[in-house]
Amino acid sequence: MADPAQSKADTVAALTKAGQDGYDAYPKDCSHSIWVMLKLMGSPDEPYRTANDLMRYMASQGSGWHRVLTVEDASKLANQGKVVLGGLAVPAGHGHVVMVMPGPPHASGGYDTGGGAVQRSMGAFPPSASGASSSWPGARSRGEKTVRDPWPAAQWPMVTFWTRD
Image (cartoon, rainbow, N blue to C red; front, side, top):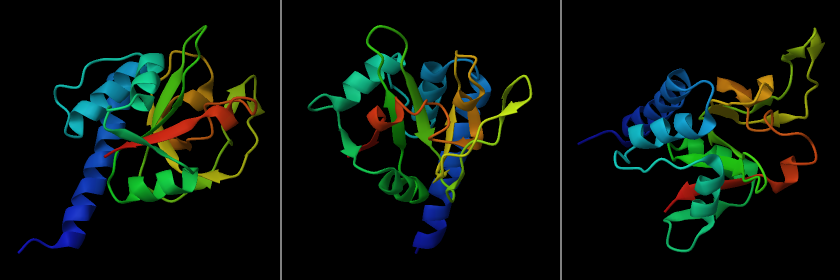
């Protein structure tokens, strides 16, 4: 009989690896990095969608995705090995999407924003993985940054999190 604890550990390890592999494949593109992650996590026929399109799709009825109401719940689900995505569609521009990585919350910020300036922490959040086409260093992560780091304060309240049924 399979050990449920080992099965969960294997799923969490696979989720972590998928996040890292997606970032490694497309460090400069969130949509493509998330697409790779989704394909690795059991959706080999997942169609490619831009961040804006993916956010709209997840919110659509019948998509198989449902909204996770809090970032704490998103973290709990990721720590159970569930795929959880967070993001924000920007209708007149490019949105951004991340995968919530398994692991304990850690301080956001702390990275160099350019010219020697260091981004201040905005609290403890779960780790994330995503590539990014923007030059903002908080948007690219292989798990070392948090789900809070990609977005400025004005956008953060509009970021939503989603998991599959």
